Amino acid sequence: MQAEFGIECIAVALTRPELEAVLAKCPYANGDPKKVHVLFCDGEVRKEAVAQLRAEHAARGAEQIEAGDGVLYVDYVDGAGDSKLTSAWLERRLGCSTTARNMNSLNRILGKMN
Image 1: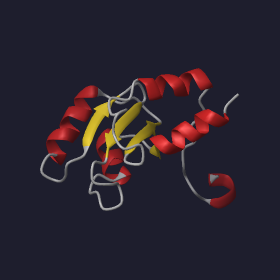
Image 2 (image 1 turned 90 degrees about the horizontal axis):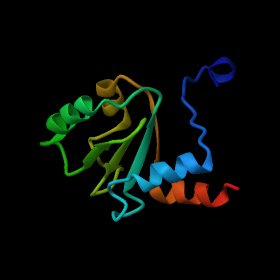
Image 3 (image 1 turned 90 degrees about the vertical axis):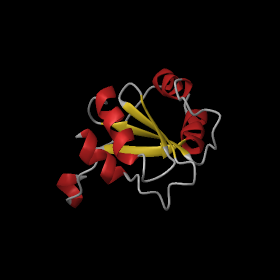
Image 4 (image 1 turned 60 degrees about the vertical axis):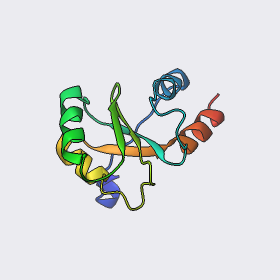
């Protein structure tokens, strides 16, 4: 993408068992699948960094944040559209790039995998 279009982005490729594991470990599995997101990171997600994120974000909104293995689980309780918990804000604090999908999208992707 960068060579062709000058856009820097990350892409994540997972096997079916890897995606199933990400979904199975989601602590917000009972939440609204449109509002629960998984942010896939291109680096390690350190639990101490996530604890700092929670502390910094506490007064900004109702979102719930939890670290996973190479992912960040976020429950945008009131929706992601107006949230102050943006990917850019998270990336600056985590020191990694992310790409996010909500649970609806991830379940559709899983359904299309052989």
